[in-house]
Image (cartoon, rainbow, N blue to C red; front, side, top):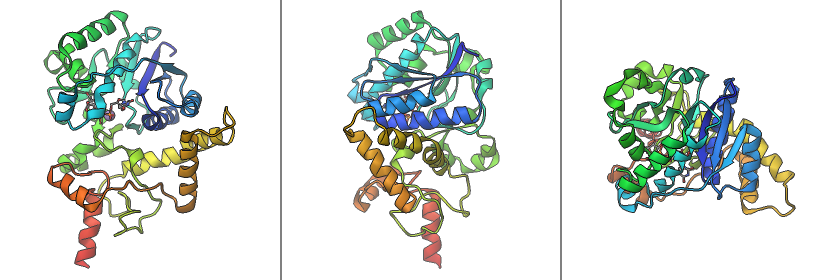
Length: 336
Ligand code: UDP
Ligand code: GLC
Ligand code: MN
């Protein structure tokens, strides 16, 4: 199938890591479709070269930014203005149909059946289910649609400051017109929903096909460990362990990253295109050395005061320090 593709986007090296894991997962699950990554000019040479080894096509595009600080502030995600760049995917007219996937998604099995759906198919957003979530959607590239979307951005902006707002306004009959365009939630299972509706996750979660690490903190921001003897250790803990009620998707993301992506980044580091290592190459070197030394990358630094404040503002670190398993471990240790 050379006229259909999975498409993702990375405007910087952090999201490029996500794209690499996504691309590897799609390959591991033997997709028969092409893989395309759109990149912005901030992506380093080093990462471009690794992306080129995973994806069939690495397309540099101009970064589009809504610049809508007010609406993005409502979502507490000032960095998401650049998600307008996603709209470039409609320019991939050498394909007849594509599936866009955010770079923060993890694919658990072959999902090629998504190509049986038509534009615009997507799963409900967990925050407002009459809107679709734009982390996974089926679309049909078309210069006309791209121009119309860009025009919609200029005329009305986006109600959330990012691509999801403008796409939902443009494909405004998604909620009511055609049920076949509603993807089952298992194709875009947002990690937030595991916490907001745990019984449903326990009932249906084993069918999950795509996990979406929606939210401010991404798997690449988290620490990770290979074992579960880390109870009580703030630095080394993660959602691991046999006591876990659900699979540790952050850990799964890290396994793919460690096994299949880091070796490619490392190879690029030791055989770089240029002689002088860049800042990004140095950071990969440090990351690889840390992984070799203790089996996990550095923990993000958040003071307990900051954590308390974030928790009180309803901004819990659901996947990391405030994760259910972490809290459970703390409670267990108190009870003991
Ligand atoms: N993205 C990017 N650079 C950024 C922010 C976002 O390339 O600085 C891309 C990336 O593909 C990402 C998508 O836009 O997955 C949407 O952003 P994000 O996943 O952070 O939004 P969320 O799903 O958390 O709302
Ligand atoms: C959402 C989507 C993401 C999109 C963002 C901005 O939460 O998950 O894909 O880029 O909103 O609209
Ligand atoms: Mn996302």
